[in-house]
Amino acid sequence: MLERNQAQSKEPRWSRHPTHLSPMLNETHNPETTSWVESANIPGTDFPIQNLPLGVFRPKGGSRPGRVGVAIGGMILGIEAAARVLPFEGLAAEAAEACRSSSLNKLMSLNADRWSALRRRLFEILRGNGPDARKHQRLLKPLLVSNEDCEMLLPATIGDYTDFYASVHHATNVGTMLRPDNPLFPNYKHLPVGYHGRSSSIVVSGTPIRRPSGQTKDDSAPGPTFGPSRQLDYELEMGFFIGPGNALGEPIQIENAESHIFGICLLNDWSARDIQKWEYQPLGPFLAKNFATTISPWIVTLEALEPFRVPVAKRSEGDPPILPHLDSIVNQERGGFDIRLEVQLRSRIMREKALQSIPLSRSSLNDLYWTIAQMLTHHSSNGCNLQPGDMMGTGTVSGSTREARGCLLELTWRGTEPIQLPTGEKRSFLQDEDEVIIRGWCERQGQTRIGFGECTGMVHPAFRSS
Image (tube, rainbow, N blue to C red; front, side):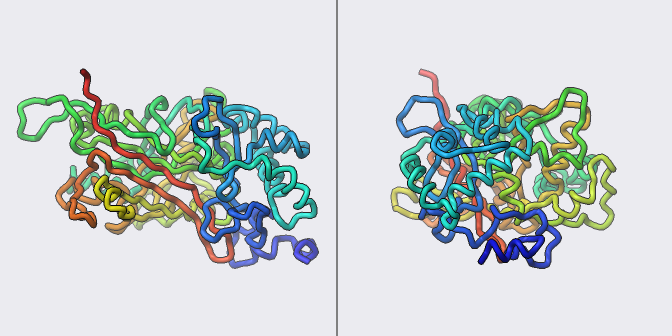
């Protein structure tokens, strides 16, 4: 009956609600579809069949190269293994062939048509109400592996990494601490501010984070000293991966920007605020940030996020107009994403007492002043060539309220307003053995909730030479 009703309408009936975004939805977004993988149907799971994020995995304790897989509930299906027992045809076959690799770079180098074809084929073979569901289950169930039995690796070989500063609330808060009368620099509302980070120190969720050492200088001290950072911080961000990219000297236009974005993940841009304070002038972030950046292992595609698009938040009265090369009607109407974000903290004493982590902040990706399409367009506007697997970060995602501040620097206002933990401990900045957990998800009435998994890291003591 569902298929017959769909055939009588130009758009899926599950997408008929008052939104201009519904024509972009397809059968992979149907909230009525369930999977024969039972864990994918549990309410609140991050990875229902409507998500199908991609990543790289291998069995725990193994030394073999990773394999490209898709998350479905609490299980992982290797795409190369699936293609050996079931046909993948046309564009989906080309995409599946690119997944015969230990990273997603080859798949990223293809175009959105092939990514979409792979997604539709995975949806077809994992759905529970398809005509061949029993056959698919019989052939694929032996290939599923539990997420708990796997080690997740970096999803791509990341050649370059750029981090932006796209939250006006974060920029205003930090600027107010340093320049109360003029918190934003003159260029902030004209272009997405960013800096080039260090790709070699990007690590996957769960990797221990060693406290960095560096030069710091107290305001009253005559000169700097060298030692472990005393003001280690997290930054709540999201990262997005580049797809096909562009040739050197050929900018990517704003109208085409999203066709070069493969997908989105969670990101924690660990920051040593005391090192940053001393070194950042005149060229900006350096050793205070390049010691570690943590990302979640699963990349959620833009197609999976289609039901959660939103118009870009209106700018404040008096803000300057956006220059034409960074502006488009499509970006204005559907360039934002309603992705809800949360940071939690768990100390060593909390773990010893079997206490759960506590939430520190909650914000939304739609709090950003610049969209991911604008960030990518600006990055390439001078002809800079972007390559498959390059990653960009949004910068700290903060909102307008205190609860939506995306780092401890803001939450504790440079350490002057410490956070009280349930154990009686206080935190102005991170202590050794603190664990930071970032989560993200999308939910909307009439659509299936999807999530990004977790981005976690525990602080380990600074390195000490013997």
